[in-house]
Length: 378
Image (cartoon, rainbow, N blue to C red):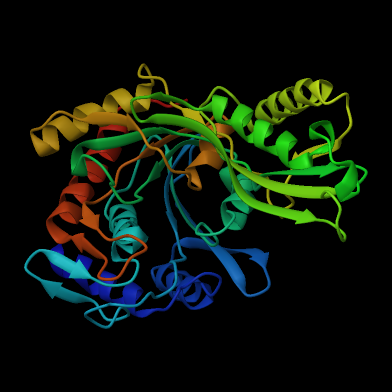
């Protein structure tokens, strides 16, 4: 098992798949499954960028093992060649080894070594996760995804190692607030005309969205400010980019409405002197809503039991504070559970994944797939 794991991890780490150049890794995975006579498909996302989709078995419902193909770029201060797997003790170093080629390899080996009787087993390898989720967005709108009842993602285990189960994530959206007014000559300055005072009060009001409940954090903050003025005049235009973390069940659209309400209320205090427009900052794919899986979820109960048996430790479901492709799956009502390997330094130099943790992850997934196969999923 470890030999196969290391061999496949070496090959995938050696293939540069830094966003948006995932094509070589897509081709490698496609050929890998084609040679093994599986049903494998290339799903075009955009020029030279393909998701790879694989399936086995026949059933009305499917379980999908999910991973993304892309990595972040190479940063300074690596002690080894980031595209050559280096193993020291239990640590395997390499770009993407933890995020998430280690999990990808485990998905592949689990798929190869288990044949379900009562459900269809699928694999998806998507592009663009480190950007704006173009690959995952293409996936959820495809026929391939329609019968998926459960998504297992093997993203890195940021917390709790092999005991952790990610059951939720916040949403995120970036908003653009455009504020315009008539400029006033320096000699006619009045507070009621000062766009900067309006903005400072708005920023203070936006900070009231902050809330925290254990790992769940909601906040809105200004990430960029641009202003325009002429000569000895007060500014006549200010553009704000507003970033956010949104705790479900609040959605990005609901937050947009709430921001508009705050702005309208504030503008009344300035006698509606300012013209304000608020919308999502443009991008190609929709921003991500949050999700949270119920603790009563059937699949979660089985996975907790499997983890308890494999690790001899209690499973720990938790809400993770970052966003990922999983948001797209969970926010459309699919059950999505995250279980991944231990490691360190995602998006940083000297990234590594624990080989023993990968082996435990493999045993968890294989045993979970066996446990689920005892049920008729309908």
